[in-house]
Length: 407
Image 1 (cartoon, rainbow, N blue to C red):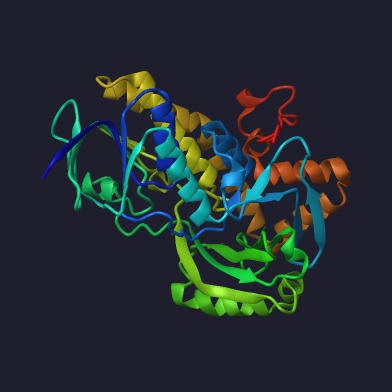
Image 2: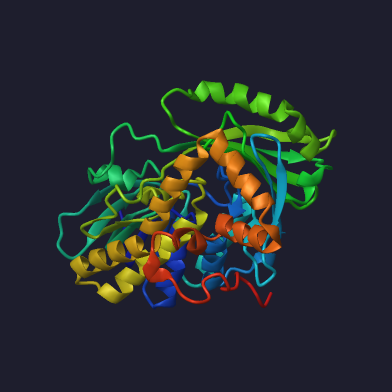
């Protein structure tokens, strides 16, 4: 088998892997990326982009106009378990939320990484690795070659084959959340142009959503915490029941049509518990369980951890794995741990119907300023985590603009 030599090998070409590849290429490192899927490929996801995700995408140089199906979001409609509805507008100082189909978004990130010079071999799966050498890692790739790299960035999902290969996985782990999604066409109700979140009593602290897409389409689904009682086979029955609820039917319109098949996926959310590094291997995205424990959103966290891993390698140097590991772990903790722990506390409140009803009631009566900043609190990590991370306080923390302000 032929050998490829690269500064860094990235396993997985999703948002975490491509973010790392772009950041490394921008710093002059040679990068090889492998992924078992051939792009473009779909990824089961709600397709929502938070402010964190949008800022990271802008930093990478992604142009929204290149992503088919991109939809800017300027407000969200919330419905409490009691049926109270309130619309919360987002600030007009940049973009704070958007929706983009993962098939289109991930493919554009792959193409962007290639334009920056990364070598991407899609359709080739990770096989095994050898970490016995002091100065490199050797990885065998199915139907391709052996790759020798100074570092490996594992961006290969919740059931990371790389994590399993080095014995750092958790046996039986199936994530904290379970999510269910389907696309809908011919949407004529408010869901055609409004992002909607339904806090259904039987889903708490989870929720159902409808995220708008161009052409009177929507991504609709729900997410629930794994509590040991819900079984995967119960999800389809819950899905049918949810779609028949009057307020959901009204939001979609009487002629809405389900497209294709529904899909389901588990979501990990324990970044403060899993190991982030091992020798010359760094874990990012779902492989690091880097998702929002309250919402299940993970694209922003994937992009961020991918970038942080790349920066750690650039600053640590090829011959200093201890420095690389230390920097990456420290930066992930600084950026994400406070948000993660605050989300856990908020989730404990929202799991009770009274907590969800109370939150919506307070927002409804808070005036325009309160509703607008509650929307920022939903979609942006800093206003939420500021409660538990006072070292991040600054005078204008509620005045920071969104992404793509000059677009």
